[in-house]
Amino acid sequence: MSQNGGPIISVASYRDGQKVRAQERASAPLAQIFDDIAASSDSYVVVADAREIGHAGKLFAQLALPEALKRDVMAPSPRPRVDKLGDTSVTVVRPASYSDEDERISLSTMHLVLTTNFLVVLHEGASTADGLFAAATPDILHYGTRSAYLHVLDRIAVDYLNVAEELTTDVDEIELQVFGGDMGAPEHIYRLGREVLELQRAVIPLADSLEDLAGEVEMEDTLDEALQLAVRHLQRKIQRSADRARELQDQLASILQVNAALIGQKQNEDMKKISAWAAILVVPTLVAGIYGMNFHNMPELGWRFGYPLSLALMAGLCLGLYAVFKRKNWL
Image 1: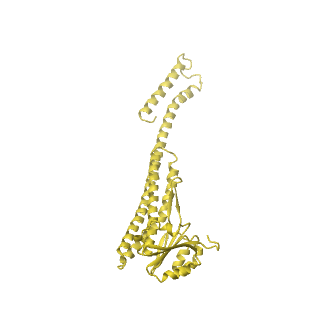
Image 2 (image 1 turned 45 degrees about the horizontal axis):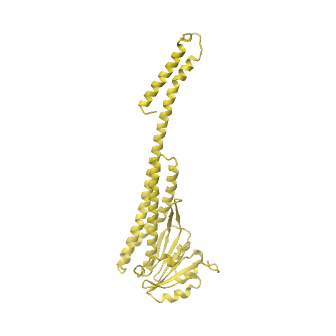
């Protein structure tokens, strides 16, 4: 944050894919930089790390951003989308990272403002332009702002695939947890289901928007074939992430059903055991209850062998019932 309260913005200028200038400035002094580069059609500026979108009004004024698209950037809704008006577009994406230790997805909000000569990246806690394009080669950046725009989205798409892979590993571990009889599995399933839902909210709307964008790109006969190919590759990566997120949700739902079935089966087995033992214990209770009434005319009360016979009868019946239930696998 600069001393005047505005955001620090990293500015990098490229020509033919090669960086020719890079600096970090506050938003107010950028007018001269934009004026210098506006006259050159073979170079562009990448602006990153605008930490507070509310301070970006001056920047948008210098870019002559249409009012409709400006509202898109300033709007609080983080829903991923691509809005296009002429040669200018605003893309909202939700970059993702995954903490395997906490099993939590962290999502931030990134706005990409694309014009003919400028790409403006507004990202919560973003890196500098050098950080965003550390892995970019001159070939990648050769085609100007569109190729830079696709490079940023491609990095985000790769992160989505990595997050989906991490989630897949954790979901596979849940399967082992369920079949191992862990009673804490349902809570684990619900927790991961919430993270999969977060990934879906970030990826699926973007996949739908990129599908429309890819259709528009296919209609542009003048667009370089390399850029068309890059758009198709990006679309496939995002779609793979969206499909994987859906698959993970279905997999978790199936695991939850299996877990419920296993719990039901275990409860059924427990009920069989309880019922069997209850039936066995009813025999001595019944015999003892009858002979405990102490009526004068009850048979065997005065018989010498009545007591040991009643004990033997109770033991024999209990053992017989135990053998029956054991044979039926109730015990």
